[in-house]
Structures are given as structure tokens and as C-alpha cells.
Amino acid sequence: MYVCLCTGITEDDVRRCVAEGAQTLADLSEKLGVATGCGTCAEHALTLIQSAELASARPQPRVINAYAV
Image (cartoon, rainbow, N blue to C red; front, side):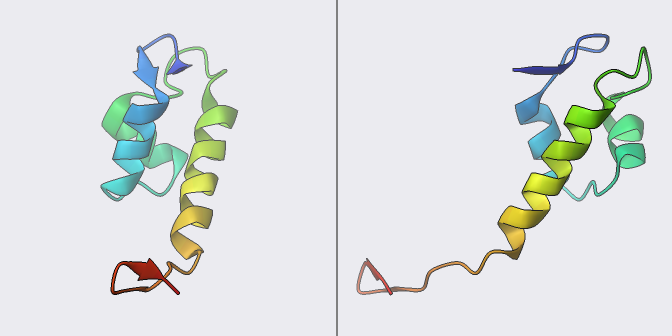
């Protein structure tokens, strides 16, 4: 799904950029051009940053002998 129609940036593009270290909307703007046109994508981009932060904060299950514990 497109996040920024002005620059053609998708959710996958934003997620990849966040995984590579982007932490703020300013980071995304600098690296991808998000929210540098009309700005209507800013809220959605921020939501994706926050969801990535929450996902990384969740404890990951340990795998022992191919079973999650």
C-alpha cells in the first residue's frame, strides 16, 4: 500500500527504512522523501514507525529443539 503518493513510497519502503535505523519522520523525509510534498502521509508514516518500535520491544520467543517456549 502506498504511504506517500507524491513520492511513490510504500509501506514496505518505510518498514525497510525503519529496520535500517530511521526513527523519526525527519529520518524518513531525509532518506525517502516522505512528507516533503503535500504532507498528508505524515500521520501514516508515524504510525508505521510506532508499530515497528512496538514490534521490536516485544519479547521474542526462544526456540529450543524447534519448539517455541
